[in-house]
Length: 455
Image (cartoon, rainbow, N blue to C red; front, side):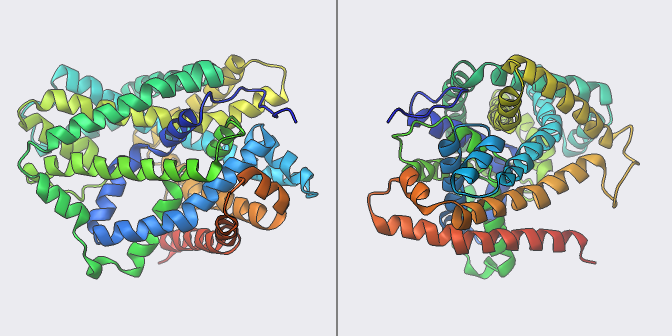
């Protein structure tokens, strides 16, 4: 039987898919957030719980997204519809793809604003703006950036163009070509920064912060944090992995490929922690500064260290590459659907969507200055879109994928796509996607909403 291929093209090898999906998973939050929550919630004990959550929740859902994408060979919207019809189900299951594509567009609109901050700091490192800077001055510089809509607009616009140029190139000339360059560059930058961290004199302090096995900090709240990060870190629920899966070679093993992606994503996050926190500790700075760690704390550290300007530039370049690879995947589901739905080129689809996300991004960056007093339920537009996507749309998308793959899709189709050599492996995945993963995602959904609105 002739292999069914996507009209958009396909990855030339399984490793390209692994790198592309890892690029989608490794983003801004992955590099600064995971190392910090690991250190704060029991170190090695937290990593162990997190890995269990990845295996029981993240990997099963990711496998489901990839197999639905490869089975459908279309955009997430049309893949969900086609696979549902094949299984004798309602084509309205395409709504899952719609939720994911819409979430991707919304996330990109405010993600590009934050990525613009990173571009600003890359330029600042080149100029030497942070040499011998103090904490108070670094804080004032960051506040001045947020208060300047013109500068924010410039960097936001540049980042949108950077992403759309890649997506417009298609699978082979855009996504794959960018992946071949950007992912090795990300690994090299991470390695260079890790070697630099080893020279700070506080490397073992960073290792202890990340890996000290402290069961006393492993509370129920810490377990929920691990569960939530296991879901969000792999770019699940937004259709990106489903879209990438539709370009995956049919002979490639879905199970082992997804395990490699999850392992690489976790490895990058941990190595990032080993590169960042020794620099923080060497300068007696606060490792719990959250987003401020990236834009206030670390510039101070780099500004005071020997060779700090060079390594500060490399650090923000690393963050910029991670943001770029993630943002590309956010746009792909919606662009793929537009090309399938209308007789237009990818370039035209990118221009249409690009204009939309650019305008939405302008509104989001205004949340920090011109329209900061405009709020809904106490949230600015930036915060509202962040809350709606992270706490409602992505968990909802993930939950619906669990229910579809576990309860509505024909078992014979699942077995055919997974092609697992050992029957017990299929049974383990099937049990996880039917019972464990949906309960876990529902818990993330409920807990996040409760934490937000509980008085």
